[in-house]
Length: 226
Image (cartoon, rainbow, N blue to C red; front, side):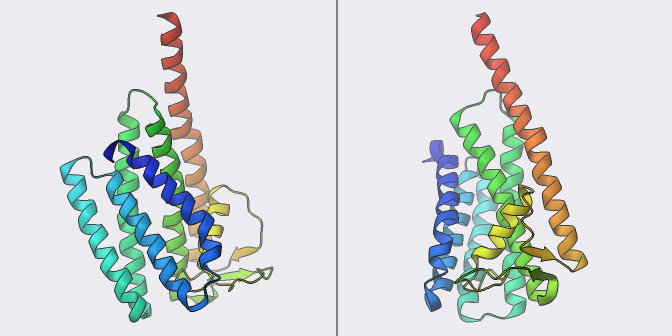
């Protein structure tokens, strides 16, 4: 399992992207479906950095805490609890991203596992920002304006609602700098968060991915010369 940990993480991320719209149609059960998917993601993230004992212990501890908060929030959905749960989840995923990026920078050869790790980090950044947008909406519900009505989906940036797919969708659109304009941040904190995410998305592609491609090309040339 350890050998394929990043493949498992990337698979989990794509499952979430593909099934979130379906989960949103389950009505009252959508909250439980969303909680299950994100708990699965957190577990996959914890497994991906458990190769070393220290990082495994830290990841395991943070995962356990987020799982408990996720379960409690299903039955006691207070604003304070949601903010704490989102904050801990962001901290945990940020820790995972940091560990994976450190490993990528130390790698000497590009493999399938390396590629899956890089892609997973990119998508995890979108999940982290989705939590952040949802947290802002809990604090200031008027932080975002919707220019178009999304059919059959609750128009909300709140991950605990039936429209839990919306913050993840907006985060991905912002990270990739597509900027459809259907959702617009209006509060200062929301605007700055969106701007920072767009910048980090570009840095990731132009720095880390370009560096991995350079390493791959260098390895290929060495094989040809030999």
